[in-house]
Amino acid sequence: MAYVVTDACTKDFVCVAECTTAAIAPTADDAKAGTVSQVYINPDECIDCGTCVSVCAQNAIYAEDELPADKAHFAEANKAYFN
Image 1 (tube, helix red, strand yellow):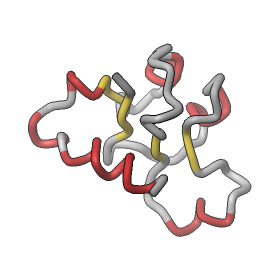
Image 2 (cartoon, one colour):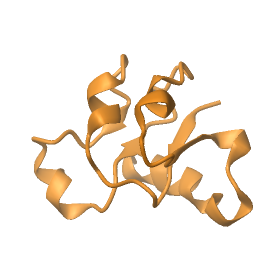
Image 3 (cartoon, one colour):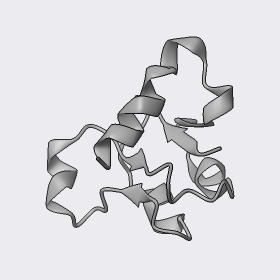
Image 4 (cartoon, helix red, strand yellow):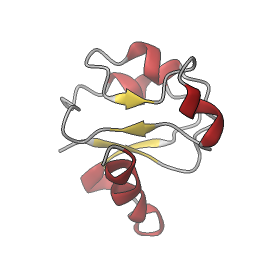
């Protein structure tokens, strides 16, 4: 089960820097960083370690199976970013 970034993300890139598998994008120096309002987690690369959750001051990251109902669509948004 992957983690999911939601709209509470302020795009401070702390989680990106701490991700051990580079499953979170875009990076701060990626050209795409200026075109999106948040970062995204690739569900195919996420190893469910939870490091991103522990460093997210905005509480914007949830385990996919713990997403609040009003944020459930972010699971697909995260996946779509990588397709």
